[in-house]
Length: 220
Image (tube, rainbow, N blue to C red; front, side, top):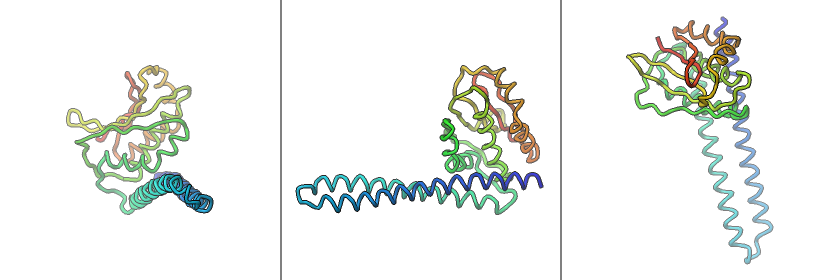
């Protein structure tokens, strides 16, 4: 029951974010269409036609850009919605994280953080509760963002080592005090929740306490 509640809250937060993004897309397209009307109304003098052509091309380029952005968002949101079709499903780890970041990136940017996913040519697939897996990644990022007095971009990478796979979510800044980070993270209620959800779906969440501190999700 608790995990179902976790899923619902997470689903609502992500969906609200994407719909807000789509509203921004539509607002930009509407504004661009209005500019096109203005240019066509005030620059029909033959002497102004070259400027009109240049300006219209710029506006049409913006409309095409936002149309593509909107299409990518709706495709990603549709895929996100279908993650509830089955309790457990086979997912490609790297692609699942990539799709999650596509629809949640705005939330992180608004708080001043850039999230970078490293390329991975040999990322395995696993059978897992897809919604809770995404929530774990999302909460892990939030845990790092909420550590007091730390402002650093965050990197994510899939690690295959010694026959085991893990997902490392770490600060990019190597000057962060590791011991101080470990102490602050241990006091985070969100970190405790992340550890518990991982345990429920047979994953392990650990602190990374080395050059670039962060969180490691281990696939058992």
